[in-house]
Length: 305
Image (cartoon, rainbow, N blue to C red; front, side, top):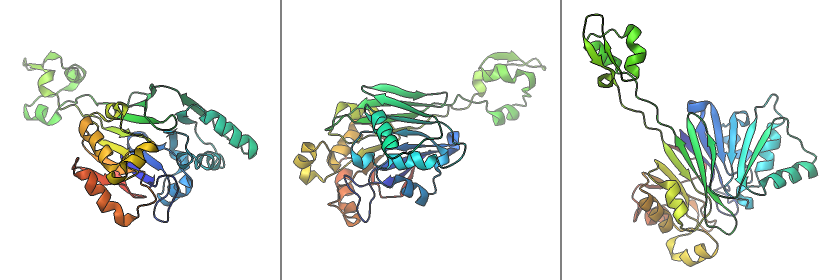
């Protein structure tokens, strides 16, 4: 599971940063890509990062401000120019269905694949299968804005084949029973307990990707014990009043959320255009004064979860 930042600027693009978009690369786990937000020129950023629109399975929008939204029509309609595209699910706040319908109608565009739209108005379980679960919670911004918690489910413990071989045990027809942790009697008369030959449970990874927000309890809940937290840090701490007034967080706010949530790692993004790449070290150092394991995202930076 990997995260690639396609855009890391707040509000408007700069020469160094495009606006908000993040790709969760699940090609190894499920052969698909999940996109979080789709600011202007997202499809161009996808091309540069070598992500195929054909691999898109789900798009999650945090909120309907333009810097998180205006690239979406291009992503959807360009995908229609490709033949035999699979269904796509779009998750976002209420109003996204009207936005898509209006853009498609006015621009005389079309979609050639099924588009399933899920509109959010409250905290919700938005996706679950046998491998992943995604929960959404309402944050605190100037418009309805959601954060997402993506949980990879644990894989059950497998049999320790090396230990079985070491004890000269031929599992044969007993494999299924041993795998369930049952006691079996072998052909040579020995009785063994499957639980003694189970390996460790493979713990799934947890990621929280939050939209624009001031510090709130929902952020802590979404980020609880995650392997990786993505949190906006629009302003430095000296501009805290400005950040709060506009519904945003500072570097220190993001770090405090990570600390309170017991997250393992923090990536700050959604950086105000007032800051250049040369300011990155200053911004990340502020966050590290509270939460040491902090990094700052730049366009096309990839992080292994």
